[in-house]
Length: 269
Image (cartoon, rainbow, N blue to C red; front, side, top):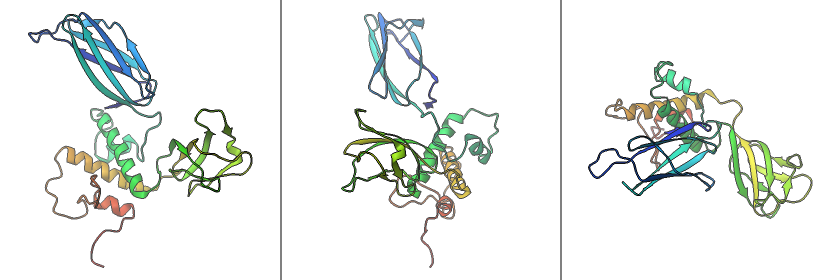
C-alpha cells in the first residue's frame, strides 16, 4: 500500500531464535532510504516486546522508500522491504467517494479504501495514456534541451502554467513572465531575456480545469473492471461491451471505457 505524504509509517520486524520463538537481538539498527538517495538511520532500536521492533517514521518525501533492519550479536538477522509515499496531490480523475458510490460501497465502509485509491490512480494513468494528454491537473518537472530555434517542447499537455525554469545547478534562472508556453503543444518560447540553453529544468502544471463527464465515466468503468476482476466477480467474458480489449497493451480496458474515450473499435462498417 502507499501512504500519504506526512503519514507516520509504522515499520516493524520480528526477530526469532533458533527455535523460532520471538527473541531480542544483541542490537538492532534501522536504515530508511529516501527517494532523494539520502538515508535516515535509527540506532539503536529497542524492542517493544521480546523480539518485536517497531519504529514510527514520519514521511517527508514522496516516492519509493527502502527499509533495512539489521540485527547483530545474538539472533543476528537482516530484513529489507520497501514502501511508497504518494505525491501531495492525488493523481485522480474521480474522487474516492465517487468510486465507492459507483461500486455501491457504503461511505462508512473504509476497509478497502487504500486498495481503491490505488485503482483510482491506476485507472487515471491508463486513461491519460490512451488520450495522450494529462487530465488530472498536477505538477511536473523535466529537463529539456532547446531545439535549434531555442524553443522547448514540454512532454505533458495541456500546459497550465510555468512555475520555475532554471539550470540544474540553479546558477541561472528565467523569469516565467518572459516565457510563453503554448497550452496545447507544450512549446515554450522566449519572449524576452536570455535564450534557453541545453539542460534546463522546467517545473510546470498541466491538466484540465474541467474534467469531461465521459472521461470520468471511463475511469469509473476501469475501476469497476479492476474491482470485479480482483474479486472474481466477472465470470466468463464471451464478448460484448464489457469485454477487455486493448491491442498491444497488457492493461485490459473494457470496450465501454474505450468508446467513452473515443476509441475506434473493430466491427461492421
